[in-house]
Amino acid sequence: MRPLLIDVNNLSYSKETLIYYSRAKLALWLMVIIGFSTFCIYLLTINKYLLALIISPFPVISGYLQYKILKRINEVQFRINSEGIQFRNEDFISWNNIENERIVVEGEHKKSRRTFFIYYI
Image (cartoon, rainbow, N blue to C red; front, side, top):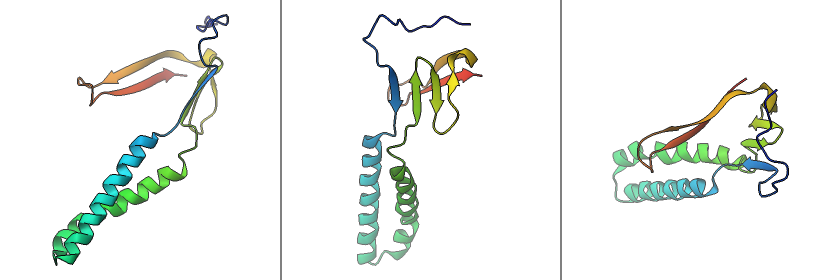
């Protein structure tokens, strides 16, 4: 059995961390969708039908995908505490069953960097 990494006497940490969808990113995408929709309507008013037809699938498809995320915005995406971790709707996994957990960072630049949490059961 692995030793517990969290000091029980140190109360400066949160007992449980919950991660949700980013509200700021969702709001930004909604503004982009509204902008593209407005641009498509403008193209229709100046009789540029072909260009409006080419651009119009983007706000429609993106709007549908963002609507699906908006319905699940209050769901917990990732839960981590001293007993284990849980990802979305999967079963809770105890720390005793997890091996080689680590954080992997991809990308060289600060803005294009992606961070992943990897573990093996």
